[in-house]
Amino acid sequence: MSDIPNPIGAFDIFLRKKDLKIHSSKKDTLKKLSKKLAKKLFGKKFATKARAELSISEESSSVKPVAKVKAKKAAFQITWAANDIEVKEAQRLRYKVFAEEMGATLLQNSDGLDIDEFDPYCDHLLIRDQDTLKVVGTYRVLPPHKAQEIGRLYSDSEFDLSRLDHLRPNLVELGRSCVHKDYRSGAVIMALWSGLAQYMQKNGYEIMLGCASIPMADGGHYAASLYNSLTNEQMAPTEFHAFPRLALPLDKLNGGLEVDAPPLIKGYLKLGAKICSAPAWDPDFNTADLLTMLRLSEINPRYAKHFLGL
Image (cartoon, rainbow, N blue to C red):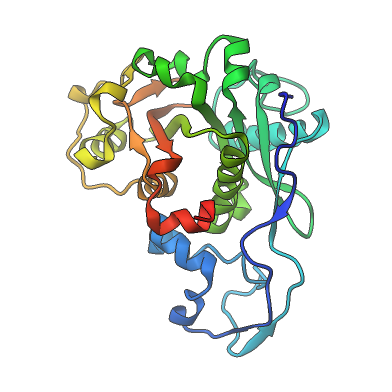
């Protein structure tokens, strides 16, 4: 673990619930905070999955009209791994998602864990189901003093970051983000981001950097089209550009398809993140990665109050 084993501890996400009257109409349901924000950040289709803020049984295919629900606790807990056992919970979830579900090529081990050399230097953010305490979402965070100790960022393996060298003292690197397949809703992603925002504020960091991955099941045409669809406002200034070490061959792909960004990247962009690179190909995960940078000072004001309390 890093020198900051548990910087903010556990806290409940967003609001403690009062008695809620839930109607069957989509309009009334979307008035709930998590669904409204999920819809804005990730899109209407993805937001319909953001049910975790309401204590509704997942076994039911519809919401009963005028049903009253009372919950004493929030749906999720945001915590930071405080020991090796908790780090392994994150590594086990990562293995299930990346290796078993996505087919990534990871180091083999008998415990079913995703482990690499960066893990001991990182702080590990955990999202737990409030009822079962199972880890259902995770990020790992490499703070600047630990990046200096190991001598590099993970992103250095995929990009030439020389134009960003002067930012390293105030930059944290995010990586290995994943959510359990049964919990993929806007609410879980927002829980992760809320934990990250609190971490940044508590430790006085300004910049988050990481590789946003695009699936390459179609050979890269979707990734090329997505990159080509980015606007000037979504790209970082030239002085903050990075350069892929193994670039996706954009000129050999159909980059003119009409595509929507994956929900996570869509959310990053709406928050105010900037894309710093053309896509790099990660052969181990078979993804196209975009180097993505978010400054706390540049978060979209619409969401700053929610995530930063501003």
